[in-house]
Image 1 (cartoon, rainbow, N blue to C red):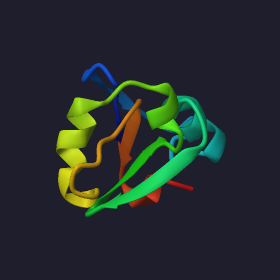
Image 2: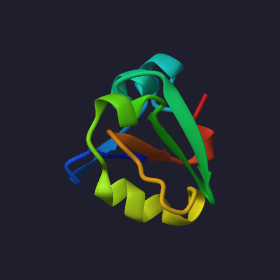
Image 3: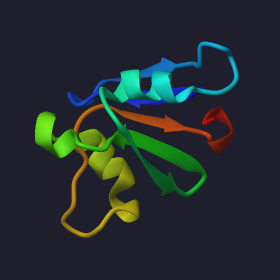
Amino acid sequence: MAKLILENGNTKTVTPENGKTFSLEELQTLVGGYIQIINAGEHIAVLNEEGKFCCRKNNAATDLLRRYIFNGDWIAGDVVIANPEEIE
C-alpha cells in the first residue's frame, strides 16, 4: 500500500482503484497536477511537477526524500510514496 504525505505533514494510506496499480489519472489527482517521479531507493515518490509554483513546502516529504534530491532543494505539495510495482 502507498502513503500520501500531505503538505501539512499528515499521512494517509492510499490504494489504487483497481487494487493493483495506480493509473496516471489517479496519481495526478492525488498530487494535484502533472506528475514528477523520483526514484527513492526501494520506493517511488510521485509529486506535483509544478508544486513549487502552486503549493506549500512539504517538510515531511522533504525530510524523507532528502538523500534523493539536490542539496538545498525541497518538495512542495502532496506526495505519493509507493512501491514500484504499484506504479503503472
